[in-house]
Image 1 (cartoon, rainbow, N blue to C red):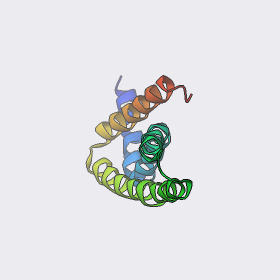
Image 2 (image 1 turned 180 degrees about the vertical axis):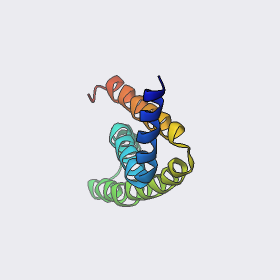
Image 3 (image 1 turned 120 degrees about the vertical axis):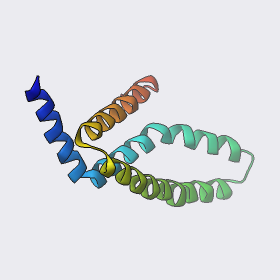
Length: 110
């Protein structure tokens, strides 16, 4: 049993050492999973407008919306993961990816 706890601790230490890459991967995965829903909400809101307006809004959403979200969320998640103990970092990262996988499966993206 202590072997597994030691292994999880070592893996958690590796996660903390690479916290920015892990945070960026979590953020990118979340944006992929929820991006279609966000796009459909924006599409419905812009339906009555001209194609040029819809196109510009989509470009703005991608550049500023998703760009800002990926930068901001990655930075916040990176700080959060970096402050955790190795055991909690392991649990948080594994549970986060599992929850995202469940959402992706529910939305038939897997």
